Amino acid sequence: MKDYRLRLPGPTSVPERVRQAIARPVLSHRGPEFTEILRRSEEMLQPVLGTRNRVFFFASSGTGMMEAALVNVLAAGERVLISTHGQFGDRFVAIAGALGARVDTLDIPWGLAPTASQVEERVRSVDYRAVVVVHNESSTGVVADLAAIGAVLRERNALLVVDSVSGLGGVEMRQDEWGVDIVASASQKALMCPPGVGVISMSDKAWETVNRDDRLPRFYWDFRKARAAVEKPETPFTTPVSLMAGLHEALEMIHEEGLPHVLARHQTVSRALRAGCAALGLASYPKAEKISSTVVCLNVPENLNGKDIVGRLKERYGTVIAGSRNKLEGRVIRIGTMGCVSAGDILTDLAHLEATLRELGWAVAPGAGMAAAAALLQEESYAR
Ligand SMILES: *Cc1c(COP(=O)(O)O)cnc(C)c1O
Image 1 (spheres, rainbow, N blue to C red):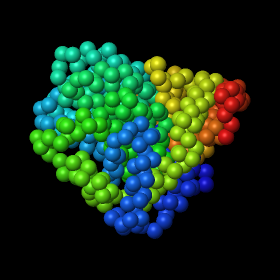
Image 2: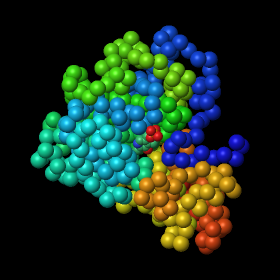
Image 3: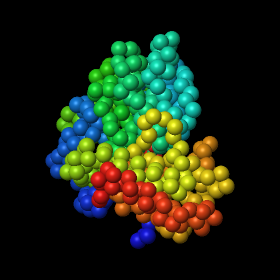
Image 4: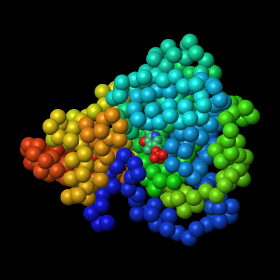
């Protein structure tokens, strides 16, 4: 596995320190050693979320947290508005539909983000239980303006439910200030852990709804159980204790580096990678104002196929990036810039990408991508 470079927009490669933490002996999930890990993880995650809410951990991937959020908020037949500005918005539509909710979509062209005025127009005419927005759309590389959307919903009944699975820890989140009622996230993206831990944080406004007995049927996902347990502090069922030890270590690393620096590093590295890719002839896909700093989405030149680029990068160079598993298949490729990503990582990406493109018959000046990225890295005086 020496030459295996995991460069996906999740799961992401996990730092050695985190892997060591996960490898420690398994702890009792109700013992004092683990309780301390749980307590400290919550304490360290709160500033990353920008919240004073309690934080809940589940054995789950991100999709489980998306479903859990809806199960706790909705009752059968209740109305929910979902922004579909990418693949994960579509997934929310599928989940809400499966749960028997009455779903309306805010159809946004992919590559753009929903605006506050678009949301306002819709919530003015319908009393929705919830408005669902993906913070960082990993399929398109777009970041939604949650501050503006939150301001629209703050004085209304509708709850703002947000998926920040691929944002949290890499893109700024200020849950309390922005009025985000539920944040759903997971361990395997910018939080630098393997997949397996889901995260939920909820506002008091959300609790008023979640505490009602007339919500959708729920047991494992029942946030009321999580709340009762967190007082001890515990989780209602067995937490993946080893993964939690890893998450605890990852959060220590984030705070040692300093959250502002972590967010700035994601910005710099993603910008430099985009600049480098543009120099290679791969233009950035998103057209929105706010572009993701955790995933770089790139248009594939007309006469190339994204699948060939992804395949060859893996086969020849061990660099594992993502294509698209939706209507952009073959046309868009994606590289993760989340978690423990450095300038060295993206320069290597660009070296491998340049060689791959050349091998596929695409003419690029030698070193053009790396030079463009290096210029930007130097400009932002960031050399790691
Ligand atoms: C990765 C991701 C998810 C969760 O996917 P899982 O495979 O279930 O962990 C959800 N939303 C977004 C935006 C993501 O990037």
